[in-house]
Amino acid sequence: MSDQLKYFLEESKMPKTWYNIAADLPKPMLPPLHPGTLKPIGPDDLAPLFPMALIGQEVSQDREIEIPEPVRKIYKQWRPSPLYRARNLEKLLDTPAKIYYKYEGVSPTGSHKPNTAVAQAFYNKEEGTKKITTETGAGQWGSSLAFACQIFGIELDVYMVKVSFEQKPYRKLIMQTYGARCVASPSKETESGKAILAKDPNNTGSLGIAISEAVEMAAKDPNTKYSLGSVLSHVLMHQTIVGNEALIQMEMAGDYPDILVGCTGGGSNFSGLVFPFLGKKFREKKETRVIACEPKSCPSLTKGKYVYDFGDTGRLTPLVKMHTLGSQFIPPATHSGGLRYHGMAPMVSHLKDIGAIEAQAFGQKECFEAGVKFSRAEGIVPAPEATHAVKGAMEAALECKKNGQTKTILFNLCGHGHFDMKAYGDYFDNKLAEDKYDEAGVNKALEELPKIA
Ligand SMILES: *Cc1c(COP(=O)(O)O)cnc(C)c1O
Image (cartoon, rainbow, N blue to C red; front, side, top):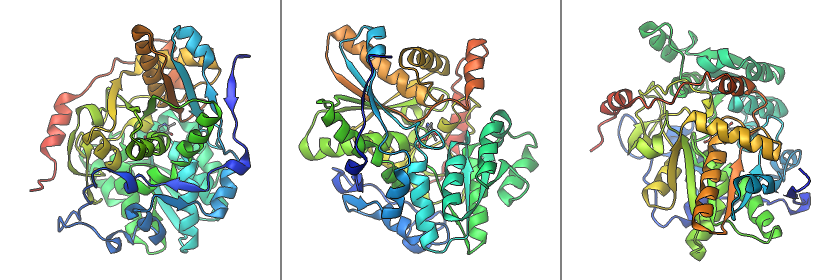
């Protein structure tokens, strides 16, 4: 490990703003639609679910948005996060490429998620919210929001996808440690959950179902708001603290990335790293290749349709234009719980549609293989989701080797895998199933897409 070089940023140089890519998009995005009227939704439609400050950020066109002082104070517990040069991995791959990674596993819950959880809890507190409901897949988001709500004294109910609730007891216990209540979804607490269980009592849940449950509970109570850990534009924007720091750190390293890589579930950690660089690409015409890496079993960007769809299975959310496998599609259970979402952030989808980013899909075995190689070279065990970014970066580095190119690669190592060692165990014991892309299931779900003229 002696060959590691890290780029620690002084606390005083931590960026004071988030970056809003809406200000620099070469082509504007299409608005979300009301599921009843099919007209663009307004702030009033969202007010029962979100504080006004966040609704304002969702539609803002300002390029820089100030990070409130109390949020910056909390960020300082683990930010600025380190940027590393992966010299040992470069050696292992025998590549002329330079590989850097930004490490978000240093946060209290071990991933990038607290970057938005703290901001969302702060704005909710400002506007008098007493309780928040949310969903969680693998439990990263639930534990991060539990951490943030506990700081601000807000009560939290988390609907956790049942298969993960059973597979990952430690995440549930972290939520409990922070004082949140965690319920397996589908649950009998909501109409959406009961409807699913009536049809299929053994349903193992999905993010789409858990979102329906959390939204339903928030909509019912004026003192309760709902919070989402990815997909929405304000969430992606809160994550840009990652890329804003990386811009400064790459300068410290005397380099600039030619290739950026991130894994995509709903798109937030990917966006957080790449948006500030994409902004430079748009404004200064910098040549930067940007690659989103997703699982073969849930390939919304590479195999999904770019259409208006619901964000949840119960069809309660507004319709958003995104790459989707269909809101009725239940992705197969894999160890990358954070990547099991039927859709993709509208902003990431839009960038894919205009050709500003590309996407690649990888199987879970090849990702764990990459994760193990990375752990042995660099000492950090990546979260199963993050192994997709590791795999994508390694593929890009090997391509550089083949073509004899000295390119600079930067990827987001969005979390550590310390709570996911069962997944590594299954990989070592050769118990991981080959990825199945359920084409018939996706086609069936696509037939049920809302019909928008
Ligand atoms: C939640 C999560 C993801 C997926 O969400 P994005 O919004 O796509 O970032 C990926 N990796 C980790 C470690 C996560 O916790």
